[in-house]
Image (cartoon, rainbow, N blue to C red):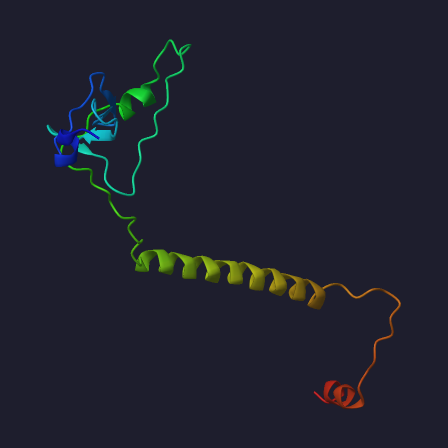
Length: 141
């Protein structure tokens, strides 16, 4: 390894590759991977690595999504944590009201069936039973 690289004075090789606002290259002396986000080149941080892939040669047209990914980033990348959805009392009230509505529909259906069975005409031919106490009350007006 050259002395300048041991001291930390790496020099980026020409032919920088840009991706998502970062520049990637190799040191022209020692060949280590380097990254540039603003103005100065640095070695790739420990625990990270650069994956060098060649572009497909037959890709003639550029899609709009690819143009969005190639835009340079301004400043530091901001990673927004996934927000937890807050408890919405109106949403819970809507669920309770929907459940009560379903229960009302079920109860109304059962009541309708009971009324139809209660007030259905009696089939002909069934004997009607006369109670003795009820017959006396009708006879004495």
